Image: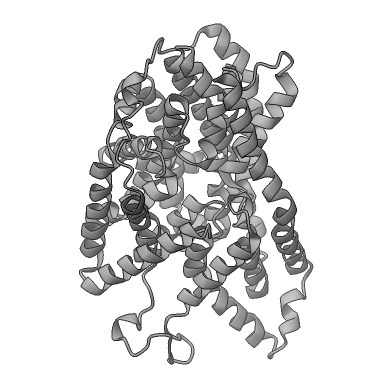
Length: 512
């Protein structure tokens, strides 16, 4: 079968010494990034982008390093959730409900190991889903013309606010801001400078890597400077790990939960804008309804740890499907990975599997390898990762700032880019204080030019008729999904997020 042959070629690429070392390094650093409250996978990948470019890595090694960081951060998010009741990122919020009560009962090691196994199962099945679904999506995507691509990008903007934003108006504002930033520079069609204000450095446009590192990494430093919360080790010394491996009976009881949650999480990940937050919430809620007959969920039930962990890691793999096959990111972190591919002159989308099969299949093979590395790393090194939680932010944040500045200067050699990065950092800090999501800003900066080019192409082909944008059944379908995807979270997203927080607060207080 052609897919297995391609996957075999991918393993040949991924199993070189350089790529194996990068996968191990990415898994280790990603787990640490995920474990530290507030960083999460998007920030983790953004912080390490400069490292990948400073080392002069090619497209495949760079993607192997950064996707290993992505998977590692999804694993690592549960460490602070279980030990400190502080989610490493939003998807790990549901893990607090049963993980922290297990830790209070002296079963922290068991909860950490079980969550590692559940993460492995979710990510493993999601990677197989990526293998079989992405090539099929590519065949479908070859039917797209300029009008359909414009509608697809509009769909990405309409849905990427999703559950992560409580206010669709703020998501729309963020998307418009991103699109505004994308038009800075010389217009490729007319040669007229736009929004450059006479600054020659802006003629080439804004570098989206500079934007990403500023918005995600530097804004985190500014938020720390504002709050100065330096006592991350307050509870760290009280942690008791206990037994490191779950019993066979616990694993057996949790296996059906992991399988069901993996399927639900993968579907949530493939849907643009749904992402790992929705994957973990749906998985936990579904399992609670299906198996919680004795009311043990929220009081330290191992299945309550397995469900959200399998769900959010499956969603992380699912989000790679639309990113690779259509060039439309399924989550915030895949938007950052999309920027990396574009900066390496590789265009994700239908032709990626034909033009750059080494990148795609090497990456997919590396995901399998990273999964096994993470499973092998997470159980014996639990003690080390718990000590990472004791690193005070006053030490961590200067390191983040240093990596950002040195890395960006190493990529471009331009001091002007450092000033732009600081400006983006301040902008990210302001937007986060106003609860405006950062992902649509990044998406607008990334896809704005391509979206504009497709709009111009579609209108030019139809001799100036804008009706061509809703001329085919495919584009009508995409516009319909975009409108529904934008309107629905106004009613549903607020309820889902409120329930996630309410369930965590009420069940967490019951367990105290």
